[in-house]
Length: 225
Image 1 (cartoon, one colour):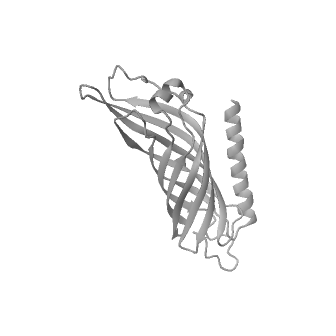
Image 2 (cartoon, one colour):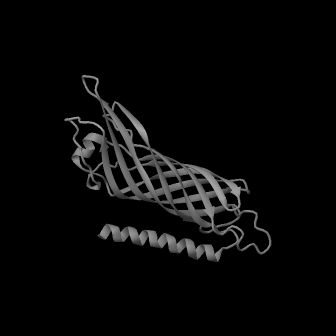
Image 3 (tube, rainbow, N blue to C red):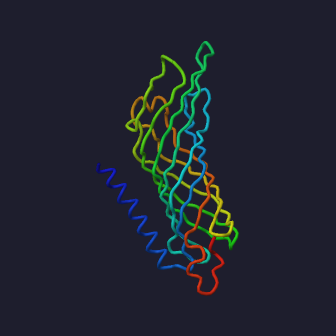
């Protein structure tokens, strides 16, 4: 319960900061919702083959200390991660498993605005593990995990994040981002045998909508997207 309470305080603090600074700096401030596609992998050491998991993310964002050319952008997103694993035994039989993880991600990014056209994003993220499951489509007797839960993994994850967003006009932005995990996610002995020093790695395609587009334009605001 303490970890959940700490997470709630973190998310609440980010949300309040977004609202406060957006109201204070209406001319350049941005706040809105975003979501899109995730392509994640864990690069499992013992696998004969691994496949990226196709998932999704969704959440909200804001920009603090916003100016014409720069801002700090915190976000709070729900994000799915994980991987697909294929193993081949001595008889050439293939056994497949899917490891599904879900997180609350809190990126904090520096935003470099390239005029009205695009933005470069670079920074770090922190994440809290909400859930974990395994889906097996095999009957492999040597499979250590027939079920899996979040106790097998570290509660927290962190890493680097970077990407680019293209302003589409009318308050919309289309972007690409890559999240490179720095924390080894396996916690239990069994998970460490299976995942080794695997870390979360996620490529994202997103669409963002700015609620402040068109607001606070007392003269001319060319940088709302």
